[in-house]
Image 1 (cartoon, rainbow, N blue to C red):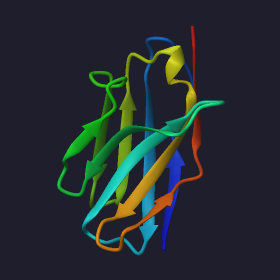
Image 2 (cartoon, rainbow, N blue to C red):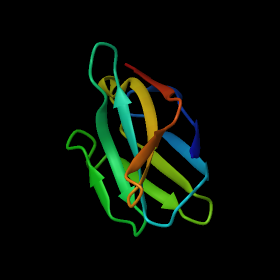
Image 3 (cartoon, rainbow, N blue to C red):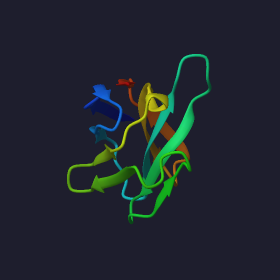
Image 4 (cartoon, rainbow, N blue to C red):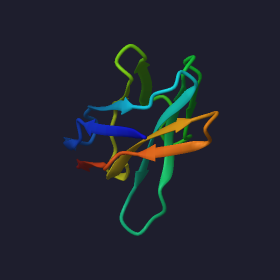
Length: 117
């Protein structure tokens, strides 16, 4: 089992910045992928960005150039730096931890991000 604790959500104005953090604990394995997903009301959960244990990243087109995902393997923590925020970035952001060889995944409880004009 893996437990995830997210922090850093909140309210920001358009053009502003927020930083999300997600700390993993429990049965951490070295080969894993951590990532952020988001879900706005009435929509499906969508990928924001992922980062592998060796630092390889994937971004949704909608956040490229504005968001940066990073990780600290010594702390089992993933970060999402969100700059140039837009109202359409408003959503609940979820952290996900995927253990590649176990083929399982775990989700955080979600943190609300609200961007106002």
